[in-house]
Structures are given as structure tokens and as C-alpha cells.
Length: 67
Image (cartoon, rainbow, N blue to C red; front, side, top):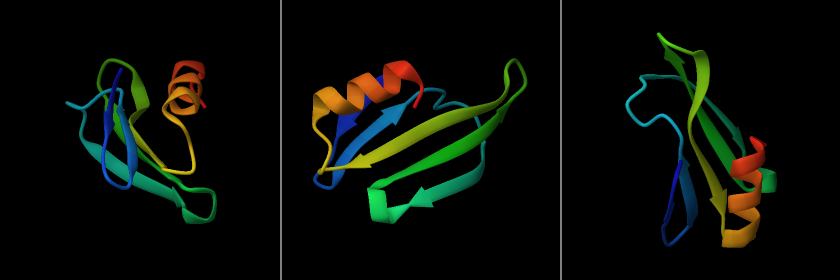
């Protein structure tokens, strides 16, 4: 897992080498996720984005908990 900060928020990468097959967005609560299909693990979260209403510590906790 790797967390990058951007001007808009935080991007958490879990499986960056996995091809994205779906994107789910919840703009009213400030996040989106990209889902990929991994040969080894099946469907996985490739990356997630949290906007600036979340702190880095919150993002880290959510990512580690798999939320």
C-alpha cells in the first residue's frame, strides 16, 4: 500500500499493476475507488481516492482497515 498526496486529496494504491475494470464514485462523501481483476486474487481495489475533507491519518486508518 502506498499513499500519495495531491492538491485534491489522497490516492491510496494497493495493486497498481492490476488492470482497472470498474470505477465506483461517491462524490457527495468525497471518494472513489478503482476495481481491478487480478489473476492471483480475483477482484481487488487497485486504488482509492479520498478528498481533502479527510486527514492523512484518517485515510491511513481506512486504507489499513480495507474500508
